[in-house]
Each structure stands twice: as structure tokens, then as C-alpha cells.
Amino acid sequence: MALNHTRNTLGEKIRIESVNQLNRGLINGIDVQRQAKQAHWNVHGPGFIELHLLFDDVYNAAIEWADLCAERLVALGGVADGRVQTVAQKTELPTYKNEFKRGLDHAAALAEALAAYGEIIRGLIDASAEIGDATTSDVFTEISRGVDDHLWKVEAHLRGE
Image (cartoon, rainbow, N blue to C red; front, top):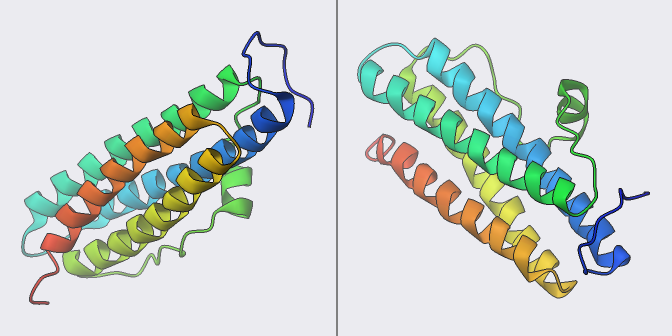
């Protein structure tokens, strides 16, 4: 991979690896966005408004998570790849089913996506720290805190289910 010119003083090898890691965070973050919006649009039944608003909160947070990844990787000289085709090919998240009828089914599916994304991000925290990119590790740590918080809020609706 060829990087764009930057005066960033991280070594090229570190920047290439960080760009790859950040694109992974971006791709999966975009999938979280789309799954949250799918849930937001299609939720019905008891607790509708609470879930409808919560799913939109997750969507908005996931936009920020993806932006953090994209902006950091471009700052390192990389090219962000958030194209729909790329996300469809490379996402690591479970596929969101489109036949859910109950709001809590949407909540459970979104919780699965958030948990999977959180696991990916925690792995990226360690991987970026190991290669010597503490700033990228910090970006992933910030995302991890947000993912865990939103997972907690979504799972709260599933308690006793």
C-alpha cells in the first residue's frame, strides 16, 4: 500500500499497519450504523418510542466512531474506504435479519452487532499499541468506551426477556 505524503513522524510501516487497522474499524463501524438505522426504521410494538430513539442514538454514535477511524487514517496518509461495496464484502459483524417483528428482536440483533464490534475494537486497541501507535490505540479506546456504553443501554431492554 502506498501512503499519501505526510509530515507525520510515525514510521511508514507503523502507519501502513495503522491505516489497515483503522479501515477495519471504519468498515465495521459503518455496518453498526446501518444495522442501527435498520432497527430504528422497523421497530414496532411495546416500548416503540424508547427503542426508536435508542437505535437512533446508536446510529449517531456509530457515525462518530467511523469518522474517528476515517479521519485518523487519512491523517496517517491512508485512504478511507467506506464504500458500500467494501463494507458488504469486509464486514465482520453478524448479518442483520430483515424479518424481525418485535422491538426486542431488533434490540437483540443490535446488541449482537455492538458486542461483535466491541470485540473487534478491543483487539485493535492492543494491536495498535503493540506496533507503537499510541494515538491510534487511544482512538480505539475512545470508540470502545462508546460501544460498551451503548451495548449496556440496548441490553437493558433485554433484561428479563
